[in-house]
Image (cartoon, rainbow, N blue to C red; front, side, top):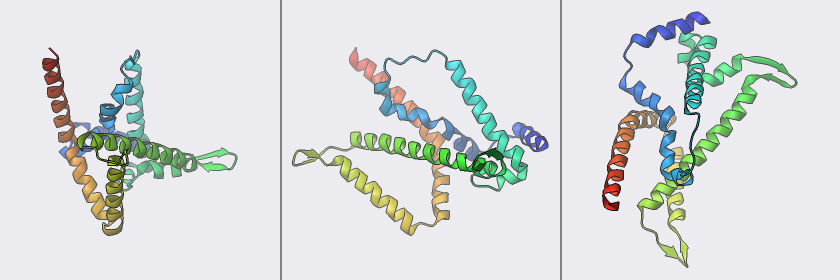
Length: 200
């Protein structure tokens, strides 16, 4: 429905809310993982940065346009996960696979698991650097304690928090995302300048 896409595009003149801007920056938060993984990529040089930028822009545009085009302007707004509903609307004839949603859900689950593993690893490494280590029988117990604390917190949230409450917490977290990223980048710049001065 190209009319729905045109309606969506005409809203570019409206100034988005702070919540929308802050939530939209979540797409770009992958760079924060370099706090941990940068030590592995010291000799890596990206030759075709412009190609990555074009591919990323194309991905974002299609992610925005396709659900609106298939579900309608008002229809896409009513879904929590518009892409799952969108893939349910697409049909193919490929053996026993009749709907795209079977392929998409498998891919979506794999990407989600990879993202969770990556972010948990980065979070664990940052917390390990923040807290002092303590050993029991020559074994560093800090990672086990941190994982135990996170496990207990996850179980408490699962048992005592309703889905609506979790959604409200996620909303607040998304609102804090942009200021936290800006503060983190400023702090990182100040620390790098301090390190340069100390090395001189």
